[in-house]
Length: 152
Image 1 (spheres, rainbow, N blue to C red):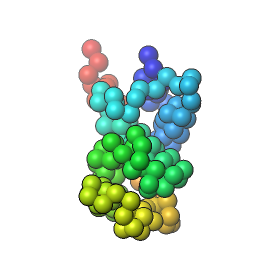
Image 2: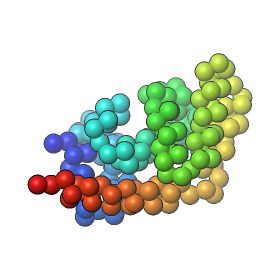
Image 3: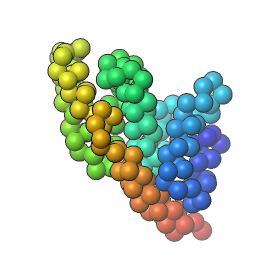
Image 4: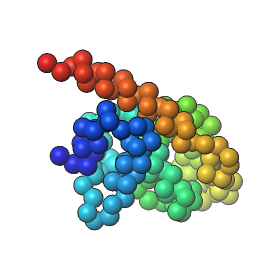
């Protein structure tokens, strides 16, 4: 059982904030981490995947800017990150990242990418985390109900 499986096992007892914080802690434990690779999350609930993709995006954006997002492993996750933003109701962030993704296909390192990148929540007063918490709480409750219903 890996760290993500442990979180799912404890999910009925965790608040949405606890889930998000624990995911972030486990994702970045370093060499001692026991966390699935980001491209191998398909068997986990969508809301957990969405939270992980947003945490990954936020970390990379904060540390290295939009250039860092486009220049490392996070780049291959951009379509999933866009979907995660849509799922939590942050269509503006999804639209910005979609535009950057399209521009980057033909004009990497364009000034337009940097300009658009400065529109992200990280550089404004928009609170992405409250949207993510609300989404995780709602989906967590559905997950618990479905898990309970599917038990013998």
